[in-house]
Length: 516
Image: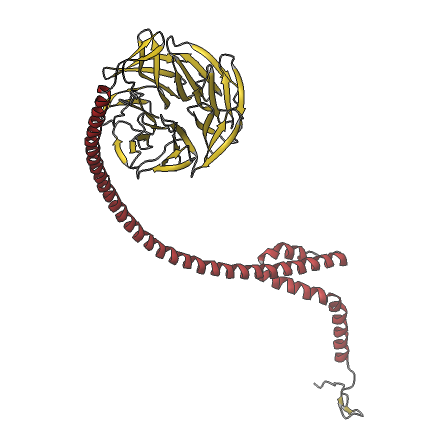
């Protein structure tokens, strides 16, 4: 069976190309292309956008919510713009996050390198430290051993020195005794008739000469107070039994003044004087009276005979550190931390004069004529005051603050205890330092440490922070004796008795010791 198919001849156009005449197939294809163009073109941008979103989601899961939201149909052009802006922001944040990660990774690598360097350096230093520690331990052990040897040598030297000094002292005492016997043998008898001195021959005066001993052993001791002992003074009392000089007054942080009597190698407490509201800093005696300065800004006067409080002097604005009786009747002088020196008429409870040194007064003494007051101060100066004009007439500058002053029995020399661990002896005729006393192990313990001159002016004595007591020879400036083993803390005061036969010392830790 034949099928007749309509055929169209192939034609050649004017440009030489083959053309097929229009047929139904071409028409269908053209219609399909037109439909495709009409249906795909409006959604082409959206399809491309969704493809990019899917690609970003594959690289960053955090965009899942955004992808899910993008999968919903967009209702308007404004929503599309908003989503596009959010996408741009997310892309920017992602880029910034990648940059921050890179920076932190680089910083981490640098820190690891630095840490390794520090570990290496620490290991080296640890080795050096261990080596130096071993060397230090060896040197410390060696130093301790040498110190023990040095102390033993010094102790042996001190014992030898004490033996030599004791021998010299015995010879000197024997020589002076012979001289006094010779003078006494040549003296004519002098009688007193009706208050008139009558010479029954050639007149000759016998000077009263005191010989101070160098103590070498403890006579007796006691715990004098319930706390630290700051002050000590030998006293003379005149009662019905006559005059005696074997009383020692002490004061301490327990706010009491105690009077002790030395007899038969024992200390007997004679009186306990109370009334102060602060620690006792200084004590002085005059006949049957005792005066004490205190931390409670006052000075108080008691009677030795009955132990009763007689006077209370108020007026200072700070701690009173020193007080002395004057030979002028009913007068005393005090120095205070309020930077004033006051002269009192204690019968009238009145301050009659006030001096203004401008520095804390740690101690003071009165010249023999009582017209000059000498004060030692925290500002390293010793001031001489003319009581007639109430002015400072001279100042002596020392190397450190002054803790105490003491006047020789002749009134010519002044001894100062200085906080640079020295004692200075000054000639008041020239107002100059003429002797300096020091020792390797001598240390001034406090601002209240007191140094004193012996009654015969041949020696000076002071206590050390170590508990030792040093005695220097005035002529040679060398240590004649060191008293040890009885005190366990800072010795604040050491002083000879008026006859020079005994020495009393007190320490911060309660103890009072009598030496002979």
